[in-house]
Picture 1 (cartoon, rainbow, N blue to C red):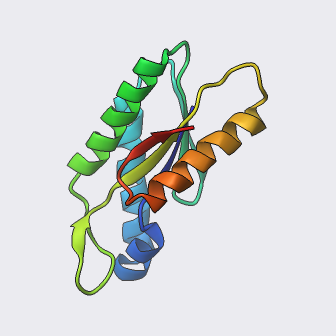
Picture 2: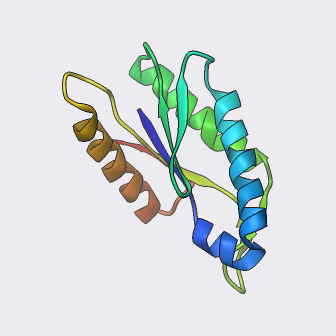
Length: 129
């Protein structure tokens, strides 16, 4: 399971407006969908968060999918100026966790913890729980 969050999205909406924010969400969601297999499940999880359920995947395959998603979103080159002095592109942070013999809430909590840590470590990175 991957939990993804668009970095500094509130600042993006504040700077560019909600209409541009909606367009960024559409482009990011398409990049995510195009980076995974047709049998994988991609869902908007709330606000600027997305969840990806990778079916029948090894840990290595999950890491590869996460990196493909991260790179494709970066390659969209959606401009983002989240403060007066820093201009960059829209990026995402990703928390990755296996779905093992526990329930979805436990897996989601692990993925969310990894995502939170990824954001604290500088964003635009992937961390596993």
